[in-house]
Amino acid sequence: MVSRSILVVVLMLFSTVSSASELDLTVNGGFEPPLANGWEWMTTGGSEFDLRQDADSDPDWEPVLSHRSASGFSRIFQEVSLPVTSTTVGVSLDLDMKAHNGAWAAGGLILEYRDKNGLAVGRTLLVQRTQDNPWEDSPIQHIIDVPEKGWNTHTIDLELELENLSGVPLDTVHKLGVILFIEAANC
Image 1: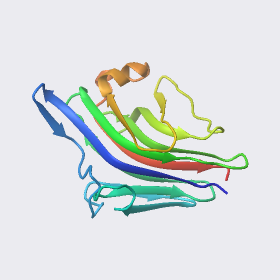
Image 2 (image 1 turned 30 degrees about the vertical axis):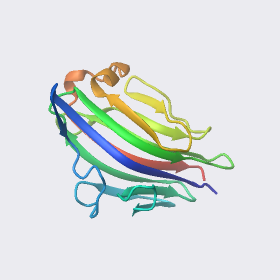
Image 3 (image 1 turned 45 degrees about the vertical axis):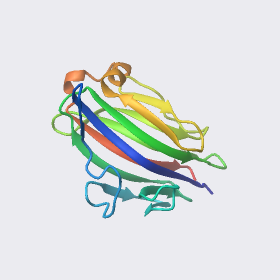
């Protein structure tokens, strides 16, 4: 049996057009109901998704993704166009991953870099994962491990982050997939 959950309180995706202005690129980045306003979701296996106000001490909404048993995943996602790659992503995550008996789990945020046709060319993962998770860094994938349990805020400058991905030419990135996820295998 595998038991873990993800809570995400704030997602900020800004493009700095000039030094004095910021433009929020996500639709419904605060996860206000109805979530269908801006976000799509998908679940398989023993995964579940819920939108709650009691997942944190503040009164706004947080998506809660969880997985109890069997292999599968849960994802909340949207695609945004990037006017420039000088974009900063900010997110606050509270992650708690556990896996037993040779199973593995991972959860967090995927920033999926996409070309003008929406095809993935690389990705960055802000993730908490269990010991047996097989994912590794590559020329098109950069993994940033997130501390265990407790709210942590992370900020990523996409232009600097793309320097970690030698297989992703900067001029091919026109869109960004923003994906909150939990995944488990071998449960």
